[in-house]
Image 1 (cartoon, rainbow, N blue to C red):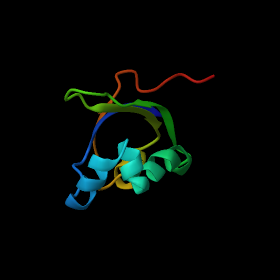
Image 2: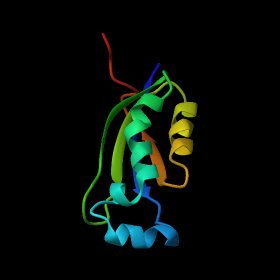
Image 3: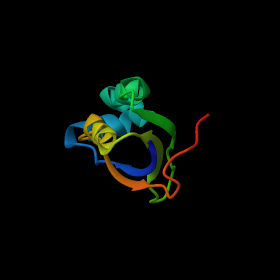
Image 4: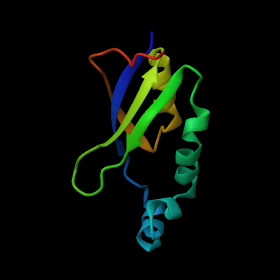
Length: 103
């Protein structure tokens, strides 16, 4: 049975090597092309047992960004943690329903 998880995530601070590039760029994706590639390729890299329901970034303020996934096991969450290792820090929370009914 699939379980739906809400993940709150924050981008890890840039390294000193990236700070100047970030200051001069129009967007973080322009300054950090490796990260931009990871974000674009993420849905296609997910295991077959993991489904991306949605994700959104919160602009301004201190609120975390959000991702919602449906997984078969904790291994799927670990895959996401490892995929973004060094870039994003996740905090996972299961939903109360345990998953979305599919017909």
